[in-house]
Image (tube, rainbow, N blue to C red; front, side, top):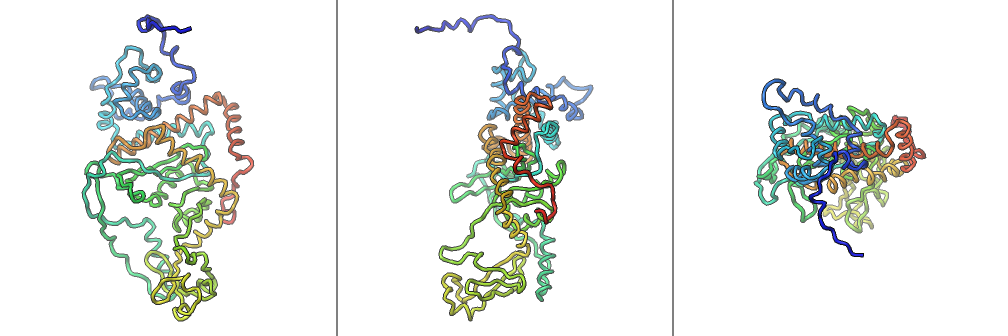
Length: 481
């Protein structure tokens, strides 16, 4: 039977409390149950006057408004305030009744400029949420997954100027130069002099947001962006993050992100990264620290029809490479980048039947390079074939890649609406705090909150991820690795 609504409900007067109207399984209820937000008062106490001035907006309410924006992926603070005005659950979360006016959308921006800028308030909020997850046993920092993703900056890619900047020197440059000279002396070569000042290079700088960096992806996509360098555990909890301009390579920030996580959690047993981090220095850094490197296979960049680099076998005893025709490529020199250059005998190559598959050199000389830290990279490649590395690397799609996917799809971070490195860093920490908080609240709600039920819940997760059958060994020595 067809029925029609008379819309009398629009004018019906009813007496209800906000608490009655918010569903028991709503996310804001789970979050309120998971963490006590009163810790925020201690974080901001010195930012407010105890005696003078007008009464402020409650700082907990102020932070909760921003959490609502990032928890539910609302694009702007203006839209967030509009949503709060009409959403019963959001009002309940803030502790505001039906008629209480919501703060103006500029309130948080003004408070950020006057009180929170250049402080560690947002890092402290992130740390407090993570601490709660650790106390409940949800965080497993024995294996780290580190990666980076680009977030488009709030800047027009067509508005820029060209400027000259110095190329960034590598952080490990001094150590590398020292070992290069040791290697040259060992081979009877003169040590290199002090490296000249980094060369100048021309870069495009945005006139809208000068602190962003031009990110080039392929031939078509060129945008100004920021890079979110992030580390998470095997359960997807974000453990640390650092924001840089979009033109900073992932591998340059790896050590900072690793140290950021090691400080509170200690040294992990293994670190899983993608091909962008597969460098001699990172391999050396991890292995020297007793950490198992988990790295992927990378295809050799060789022309079709030519021998691959692995076709030339390095003989450690003779310190030479052996080509597919069983001839030696002998040591020539070690360059400033740390690569040992091995050259063939052109007289033998000239008449070699494999010449067309070996080199296009006009002087019939084949050169093969080998980094002075190549042993570490080869060890990382050897570990790639172990079942443990295969298992850990396969979890990247469920951990760090999912973190980035959720951050962009569910929490509004495909591009940033803010400008400046400090503001974008603040936004990153709040977004990651929200993601951790959402996971913490949901898991606590599913487990019922009691220690016994939490333990049972974690046991089910472990079974699901097959951890009980593939536990990581406790030994951390290089021989165990």
